[in-house]
Amino acid sequence: MQINSIGVIGAGQMGNGIAQVAAMAGLDVIMNDISEEFVQRGYASITKILNRSVDKEKISSTEKDEILKRIKTSTHINDMSDVDFVIEAATENEAVKYKLFEDLDTICADHTILATNTSSIPIGRVAAQTERPEKVIGMHFMNPVPVMKLVEVIKGLVTSDETFQITWDLSLKFGKTPAESNDYPGFISNRILMPMINEAIYCLYHGVGKKEDIDTVMKLGMNHPMGPLSLADLIGLDTCLAIMETLYDGFKDSKYRPCPLLRKYVESGLLGRKTGKGFYSYE
Ligand code: CAA
Image (tube, rainbow, N blue to C red; front, top):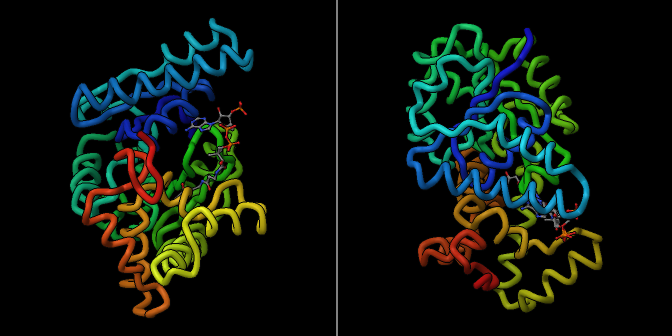
């Protein structure tokens, strides 16, 4: 099956990054969100990143215009009726995602594949909201999407081999390197990454070290591009907490308990870069 058009649900930091890489791969994109303000903010963010690429002479100004022309914005989910492949990157909330998949299932053409960029919600549960579970799959991008090379492709129990292959090939077309994961809590990426971040927060909570020292140890000692507390701020502390809770609920193993300090930050509305303050300040 030839994929010519992509629908992206959600114009936030993941959604607009996905829309950008899809358009850069030459595909027509419809980027959808619930309000005009959200889609315009997402579009402005793509424009800003592409302008930077023009300044750095990575792309020409004509190429930038062509990429932007391929991205249409939408605030109506019905606009997804003609796309070949939908990538849902809405907020990491089960009820929101379930309703979206129920709606997409009735709106989209029969051949359309429905992928979710969830970082931890089971693919099988999302697929069960539809009458096409064999065409539902996980397509998990990393933040910042235009920079990070990985796409984790997650097969639900009933995802078909054809759906898997199309998603794998699409990841390659996006210029990414796919990795296959089965549908268990946190998949591969967050099963490994999030307990490390949670443990870094425990180090802060227990006073083992100051935030800067915890990050310096992991940055310079382990050659990570950024320390775990900075990374948590980049991902969003609410997302980190949601993933830890999924791991804890899924395995019922105390090693996945979220650090109380993480919960306290989230309850206080300190969610990281997106709110201007998390472990660090971004004002
Ligand atoms: N969008 C687009 N491009 C960006 C960007 C963004 N938000 N942030 C940085 N870049 C680009 C810069 O423009 C720059 O491009 P050039 O090489 O063309 O100049 C390049 O990335 C490097 O940026 P900087 O020089 O400003 O900074 P850096 O070298 O420190 O890199 C970083 C920044 C790429 C974010 C790097 O620190 C990094 O790789 N951090 C780790 C990120 C990571 O682990 N992400 C995965 C999180 S887990 C996840 O997303 C999944 C989940 O489910 C939780």
